[in-house]
Amino acid sequence: MKPVLVVLTGAGISAESGLRTFRDSDGLWEGYDIYEVASPIGWNKNPQLVLDFYNMRRRDVCNAQPNAAHFGLAQLEEVFDVRIITQNIDDLHERAGSTNVLHLHGEICKMRSIHDEDTIYPYTDDIRLGDLAPDGGQYRPHIVWFGEAVPMIERAAAEVAKADMFVVIGTSLNVYPAAGLVDFAGDHVPKFVIDKKAPEVHGLPNVQVIEKPATEGVQELITLLTQ
Image (cartoon, rainbow, N blue to C red):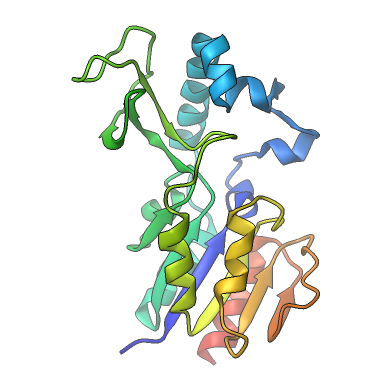
C-alpha cells in the first residue's frame, strides 16, 4: 500500500494561476465587501449582487489554468495515496489530474437549491434570478458562505488523522474550522508547510517550513519526498 499523503491547500496555490483571494486586499474581494457577497445576510439582502459576483468568479476559474503546484501534487499520486483537502472553490486540482479532492468550502462550478444543500447540480452558464431547481427553490452557488456550517469538516478531519505525511500549502491557517485540521495529524507525522509568507507554526511538532511560492515549494517537496 502507498503511504497516505494528506494535503491541505488554500488560496496561495491558486494565486499563481491568477485567482485572487479577498485576503489580498483588506477584506475586499475584487472590490466587494466580502459579507455583502459571501454570507446568507448578503444573499437575503441582494441575491442579484451575489449571483453576479459568483458568475464572475466562475468565469475567472474557467479562464484560469492549473499551475506547476497543482500538477506536482497530481504527479505525487504515482508514489503516494494523495488525498487533497482544499479550501478553494476552483477545480484546478481536478484539472491537473488529482483524483481524490475534498472541497471544504464548496465548488464554484456547481449549484444547489436554496431549499436543499445536499442535491448538487453542475452548471456551465450564469445562474440568474428565476432559475429554479426541481424543488422550486432558486438556484444558488454551491459555496459555503461565512456564517454557514462546513459540512465536510468531519470527513476532512478523519482524512488528516489517517495521514502518514501532512502538507499545508498556501493557507494562512487563520480560517476556522479548516485551520484546526492540523491538530488531527499525529505528533509523529512529518509535516510540511509551504507558503511564500509562511504562517506561524509554534507548537506544531515534526514540521518543516518551506517559505516559497507554491509552485517552487511543491517542487522542493517532491524532491524531499522522492529522493
